[in-house]
Image 1: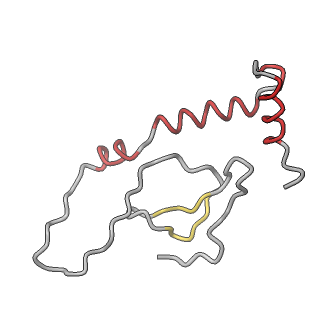
Image 2 (image 1 turned 90 degrees about the vertical axis):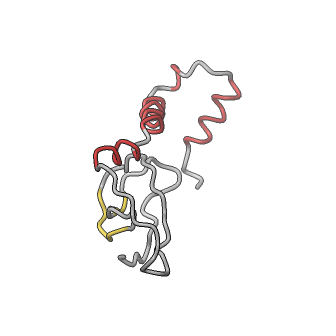
Length: 111
């Protein structure tokens, strides 16, 4: 596994623009990609302490595994939030107080 000096790549106040590439087991490779990672299920499984006499590893069809890991609902929500972020304030159709809070959250000059 690659050691990352600074694992945090993105600001918590902006849409993520970079991510670390993960290997098949879900560990970072040390390679950075300039795009947002798709939401997927990544299940961390500890390596077994004993090597013999345990349960054999289950083998899945790779297509089925990638289909199971993809989190399409989260990716669809992200797309809708991106549309909202790009929308002008006049199209929000919210109350005055909600609009005031949304403007505050969008303003990162004081942070």
